[in-house]
Image (tube, rainbow, N blue to C red; front, top):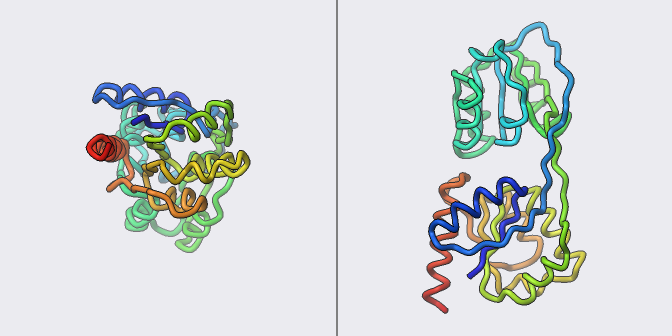
Length: 242
């Protein structure tokens, strides 16, 4: 069984190396391209908290000494590890999802607090309204961009049509959306029926489900460790059935 990795190229290479160590064969075909966005320095009269909701934001946000002692909130152990390596010392992490993180944040916030959120877009209305409802100020900092891509349609067509026993892994809703768009565009929906889809969260599952009734398996927790374990589990099951 071959596993199609759809993450951005650098992330896919790292995942491929991990999977190869446990004997799982992979094929890399990114459906998302991540690029650094050179944002301007932001000016706020005070800064109370920094919130990171992705490992990409942690990678691309410029660390400065003035942030060293700020309380930082993060989603996911991978994000937390990157922040620790960059020098952040006071980190509260929610390994599940954004909703869990906001619950943690709410326990610390008081009216007038200022929160910055390094992310891939200039604004997030849902999150902004959450902080406004608590009397806090929220500022999104676009520090990277996410672009839906498929650089090699021929490679995708060959995989979907000819690789009967195969698995496809998704780590984000946007990556899944990019894949769905391309599958629909190339009229490959019928070839999804014999594939196993391994996804990191229910939100990703919702995106893939737009292709119809498929075999979709969700990781127990939204992190790399659980994804690897799920892929290994389904890979071994496929070998037994085959």
